[in-house]
Image 1 (tube, rainbow, N blue to C red):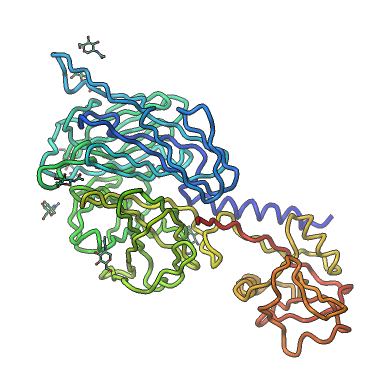
Image 2: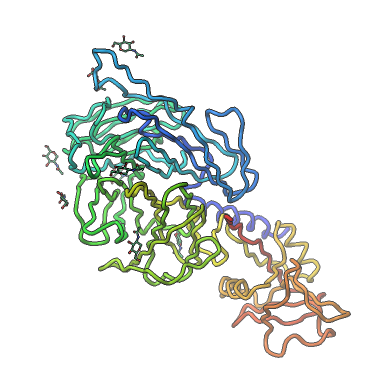
Length: 532
Ligand SMILES: *[C@@H]1O[C@H](CO)[C@@H](O)[C@H](O)[C@H]1NC(C)=O
Ligand SMILES: *[C@@H]1O[C@H](CO)[C@@H](O)[C@H](O)[C@H]1NC(C)=O
Ligand SMILES: *[C@@H]1O[C@H](CO)[C@@H](O)[C@H](O)[C@H]1NC(C)=O
Ligand SMILES: *[C@@H]1O[C@H](CO)[C@@H](O)[C@H](O)[C@H]1NC(C)=O
Ligand SMILES: *[C@@H]1O[C@H](CO)[C@@H](O)[C@H](O)[C@H]1NC(C)=O
Ligand SMILES: *[C@@H]1O[C@H](CO)[C@@H](O)[C@H](O)[C@H]1NC(C)=O
Ligand SMILES: *[C@@H]1O[C@H](CO)[C@@H](O)[C@H](O)[C@H]1NC(C)=O
Ligand SMILES: *[C@@H]1O[C@H](CO)[C@@H](O)[C@H](O)[C@H]1NC(C)=O
């Protein structure tokens, strides 16, 4: 036995693992709607969870429903969980104590699926609408930096934090324990507040404008949201503010700020040492923690350059004006696609003083946004009665590819043993791969570039010609139109009915006798997400 088979399997596993560590896709999520657990609006909340499946035959189960829902790749379904979460019950007896209304809530929804999905939670209550990207349980962390509280009219400053929530409360943290066991959580800062949270429950804690609260640390993975049940907007109205706090990180990262978010932009910065609220006139901020844009009606978690991705799912929110904001390095404006359509060139704005540019597009249905050769970031914003809300779009991949939104990467492998063309087909199949069919010019160029410097000089490729007609065919039955024959190739049928590819220069092809020996070039195409 040659050592090749094991190598192939390992490589495939490693590549799939690498491509999946950096996404918002997963199989287990715990969703909370903050306005459902805080008392403010007398009207009922309307809560929806939008699920997009990335693979065929995905079964999705909500903790409420007894049945599971089947979805295929690229399909989106919204689950209305309003009934399950129910009405907020307010104890309006005379000795109503605003500070004891709710401290711990069990109004969470648990979502599980058999294959990877991405999720967005959209809630509306009264005139207020908010959306949140929900990250899977496995991507949560046990440490979060707490954003500083912006000083806005109407956010009463509540002294020391309390594990109690009231009407018109100031900003608060919601800490969710997604699963077993019980979580021991400590809010650290000038004071230390210990909380114990059962599985599937959420604790709510006020945060104040001092530096009493700096970070959340837990003995297991938890989710942390920063929100306000009714922050003042314009004309004496108020609305929900809500953002998922990203896990704490130690590296200093660069956060570009899309110019449509305004300048100077109000940014809530927090790291190991402190939390600061700044009006940034620069369109890039650095932080070894988190950065959140603040508007009176919007909290938008910024994505650092170091965490850019190449493919995003944007789940269209019905009845609203939906836009995408794309931020990318100025050298990588080319190659961006919305669904199957290349992004037109117009409307780029420079982020002055940085190497980044930004643009926006309106969309009218759920779509996939991808880059063919670089990483970028995409924010999804929607407008409700002249007020914007939004969140970073879920990342599906950080593996740019000219073929689209890559779920599992391609596998290209030159086997070690030189053998006949027929034997090569079988050797590739033993690895669950195929002798490569190079039917498009893009794939020819990509493969040539990929294999440059390999020690093999010539490899079998998956084409053969008819001895009757002399016509060439690809093994995968694609049309034989784009060709890359080397000079004065191919010769006539008698010179050979199979073909090898050179790994030097432009990777030209030559006809060869099928019984000669060469190393097989095996291949598996990447799995690409399509949303139609
Ligand atoms: C409402 O508050 C009263 C007095 O504090 C208490 O006796 C009663 O059990 C509460 N009702 C509910 C539904 O919590
Ligand atoms: C919640 O409020 C009640 C009444 O004001 C108080 O006794 C209790 O200690 C508070 N809980 C916490 C964790 O602060
Ligand atoms: C935090 O609060 C303490 C005590 O009030 C103060 O001495 C310290 O300077 C504050 N730190 C920051 C970063 O504001
Ligand atoms: C960041 O670094 C500090 C000091 O080196 C360490 O105590 C802390 O655990 C680190 N935090 C994270 C999230 O890695
Ligand atoms: C930022 O600008 C706003 C509006 O001009 C102002 O109200 C606020 O105090 C400023 N914040 C800081 C931290 O400078
Ligand atoms: C979209 O970009 C254009 C500039 O190309 C800008 O004028 C417009 O305000 C942006 N739209 C939104 C909703 O930000
Ligand atoms: C895109 O981002 C991922 C994850 O950070 C990284 O591994 C990859 O090399 C990046 N690709 C490009 C072309 O920058
Ligand atoms: C939009 O907001 C204004 C106040 O800013 C309010 O008077 C109006 O009723 C709102 N419209 C809807 C459809 O909510």
